[in-house]
Each structure stands twice: as C-alpha cells, then as structure tokens.
Image 1 (cartoon, rainbow, N blue to C red):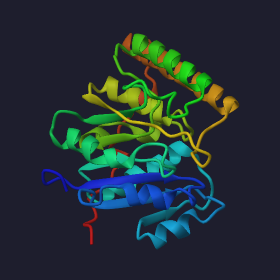
Image 2 (image 1 turned 30 degrees about the vertical axis):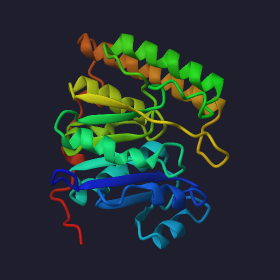
Image 3 (image 1 turned 45 degrees about the vertical axis):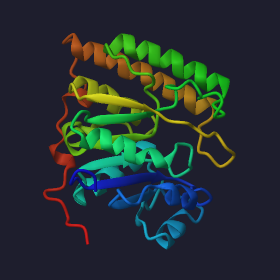
Image 4 (image 1 turned 180 degrees about the vertical axis):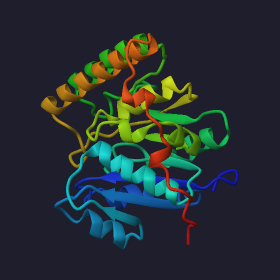
Length: 260
C-alpha cells in the first residue's frame, strides 16, 4: 500500500513466458498489494509461469486482442478493490521498478493518470527503439497534441498508472479491442479533464520484447488519426462518438471483492 491506498499491478500478457519471471521479480512488492495477469490465449507457458509465481491469473479461452485484454485486467483490478492500477507489460520493455514512483504520483492526489514516457529524457533510441517507430511516435504525438489541446511527450506508452476515479469515469468498453485502445483512453482522459502526469522511463527493445510490425503499426497510426478526428468533431459538437459519450457504469463491478 501507499498512503493507505491499495496498489494493484495488471499485466496484459501474450506469449510472455520467457520474460514474465524477470518482470515480476523487479516489481516493488513492498508497495504492490496484488499482481493480476490476463493471458490472451497464449500458445506458450505464460499462464503456467504466472501461476507458478503466485500471480492471480485470468486466461481468455481465445485471443481477443490487446485492448480486450486490458478491459479484463481493469475489471479484475477494480473488482479486487484497487485504488491505484498500474498497467505493466510483462516483456520487460518498461522498467518495473518505477511502479512505486508512478503509483505515488497518483496516491498523492496530484494526478489521476501517470504515463511512463519513453521520450522524456531523450533515451528512447538508445534503448533500441527503431528509427521509424521513433519518428512515427513523434509525428503522431505532435498531431494529437495539436488536435486535443494537450502537451504530452508521447501518447503511445504502454506503462501507465490510473486512479480508481480515472478508470471509473472512462467508458472503456466503448474502445477498440486492438492496439489503438491505449490511445483512445488518453483521448477520453483529456475529454474528461483528468489530470495527467508523466515520468521519464527507460525502454528496452530486446529480442523477447513484444513489438508490432510495420503493417500493424500503420493500422494503429490510422486509428490514432481517427481518434483525433472523432475528438475534434465531439469537441465542436458535430458528432457524439461513443468513446466520448458512453457511460462507464456498466463496466464496473457492483462492489469490490475483498482481497484474501
């Protein structure tokens, strides 16, 4: 716990058997109350390794997609009484030891949502981020900051800490089940005037790190543009996109399940 608040780390997993143990070991367990992993029907030993480590493990019976995986993660965390939910990829691309710092920024009451930014600090390329991904990251972020009226260093990080308030005020179920889910959440957070903070986070693009190829990245980029256009149309009153007009109430458990 931090400041009397229950901290839950969620890991949306797919084929993470090789990296899960190292990621789990680096989590600051002195402040994290529970770790939940959702396995999106991996064809390796991800679920077995997770259970061996004592992680609360949920397994999809078929592959539903990255966004759908996160929806399950957040539902489980909220049902388990989380006050702060930190989403950490189990491939050790992001630094787990920063969970404490990110959760602290939320428990302080200063921020509703904190991003582990690979761009702050200027070492994304040194961490192995491919040049084409770096350039596309910067261009898409520049465009979204202009469209959404924000000043974030990047919109595309997968390392995030959310307050319970943040997750319960966003219509998560209205979002895509694919990779653009992350981007839609940030647009929704801005639409809801949530307080967003950032912290510099080193990244590691190693052989076992999860990374989508150029074709999937192009699809993601188009989704980012569509999200920005939908936001502008919504802000101008020209449209009522479900991702900005939907309600979050149907997503939430009726009451948290007490932790054992």
